[in-house]
Length: 385
Image 1: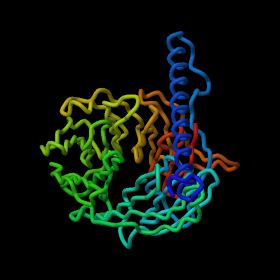
Image 2: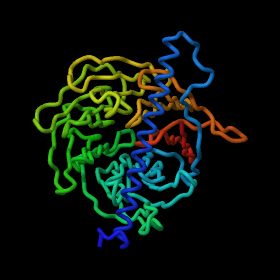
Image 3: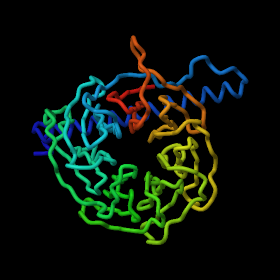
Image 4: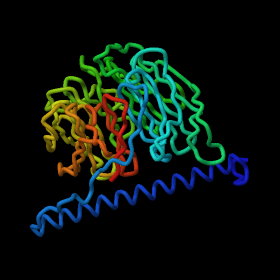
């Protein structure tokens, strides 16, 4: 019956196909907007014209989500195809939000102890699942989210689909990175690290651990990135500022880049569109470095001094050359990958113009020109360009 467009299953399949195609067209349009803004900027520089009073591309507040009862937001992830944002609070509370209406779709607890330190969407193109990893090393996968707006969509009733211990030797300490995960949808593999001396790969189709290698460092893994087009190759940032590249296909020791960061790596990212061979990493000290993912051991290609204050959050857009950094000094800086600043956000929009809180997490939408910012209060800000 799934092939029959008049059946419930067929209607849902048709809805998802049209929804996904529409979102991909939107993504192409967003990339084109950014390209046009960059071309206009470069033309102005070539002509010697003064910069425009207002940047051609800037992020402004589109909405705020009031996560009542939460003291902070530690993680946020946009769904690629639905108007939904998954949010984690300071303990392990999960919530789903419609960021267009500001409505909370569901709230529940992930596990019985510790913090939730990893969050990702699985199979977002079809029947969506939400993955949450806690600092006790346990990964839980949730279904029944009711996101689709077709015939089968409806009230969210989260249910536990599966759970497993991804890292049984994780040191659950308050100041540790907890469990850090990266999901590779193409291979259906989940890469897990954190405050453990091993990096593991889980084949979720076969439900087995396919690889387990030594990290070669006493510091905890704080960030993971997957270079595009290179299956089973993982870049890992560490709490001591080092960056290492693991090729799990060859089962050899990790290759380390020169230690140019002097502090905890907040985020690392491999960009798939504008610079597929470029790896970016940013640390708490406020510097952002770009590396060649093909030549581990070589010095960084370039460095950006993003901010002088402590960098508490960093995010990179998946399909456009956009970056955002956040600070405990209560501001968000939006910029391009070449270092040009777009704008800085310090206040919420509104009559009273309340100052945003110290930034705890940042996330870009995978395809749209949207960003979410969570801080050490109950407010999650949504920003659009």
